[in-house]
Amino acid sequence: AAPMPLPSQVAAPRGGNFAPIPPQAAVAPDPSAVPNPSAVSNRMGGDEASARRLWQVVAQSFKAAEQRAIPSEDIDNVGSIAGEERVPFWEQPEDYAETQRKDRRTIFMHDDWVRHRSSERFLRNMLSIPSSGINRALYKELVFVTSVAAFVVAFNCLFVSYQGAGGVVHPGPLNFLDANLKTMSLPALPFTIAMPALSLLLVFRTNTAYSRWNEARTLWGGLINNCRNVVRQSNQYFPDDARHTTLKRRMAAETTAFARALRNFLRGPSDDDVLRGELYELVSAGLMSPAQAEATMSASNRPMFCLQAMSATLRRGGTHSN
Image (cartoon, rainbow, N blue to C red):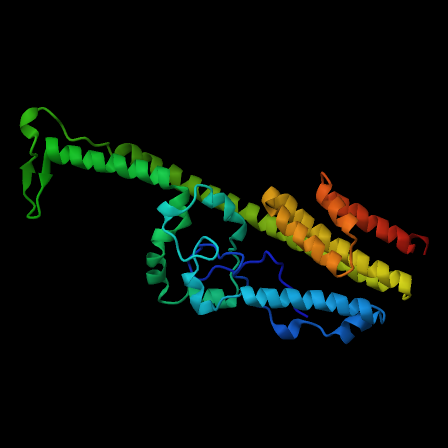
């Protein structure tokens, strides 16, 4: 079965436009990927009641993700603020760049690459410039550089000279105030000398940034694979009786909680409500006690707390004596 998307999963950006998609616009999962209760029960040693509760949680998560999904043809109309149309960068909040960072995805799938190669990409990107998050994040620098350039041009046109549409140079309207004023400009030599160094610096910074991103992606992928191996090995080596079937389910739930707690650790306090909701989904499914969910939220290091819980469950399974 295909992996179920997390409640906080967001749609991948389309084409060359990297404006984030709000969390409400998650990708709709394939309903056929939801296993039926009988299949779940067989995998859990015949515990039909527990399997049905787990199946209901999975089905509800898929249904909620499907309701949050938006058609791919309408994805360009989604704004940078959840539930709204595109918002001009001058109307976006001050903390836009930081709050929307968790909703950005730069991993393209096949349909994204097809859309990215489309001949309509240029027009689509030009139309999205007013709502660009880069403009919002760098608006102070943009305003400063634009203001300085406008001042220099206005000063030269007023006090020195300007070139008309016919190519004729005319004295500025205020040139009579002081004929000794010279054109305000910077010599091109420093920029010519610094250009190779700036080019190399830009390349090195870009390569370093990509290396860090790729390393993080590789480490996270390895972590997810290890979590899957933990659950798989628990299902394989725990005996097939009622007590160990409960421990299998608990190990799977605690492994899920660990991955999500680690995500919460990386995102910070802004993800606390999401993590709490995900833990109580496990509580509702009978896979975790409310006390353990609250203890996880109260722990100073939530991922380590979840790892300790996994170790305790493994110790109860008695596999160390085999």
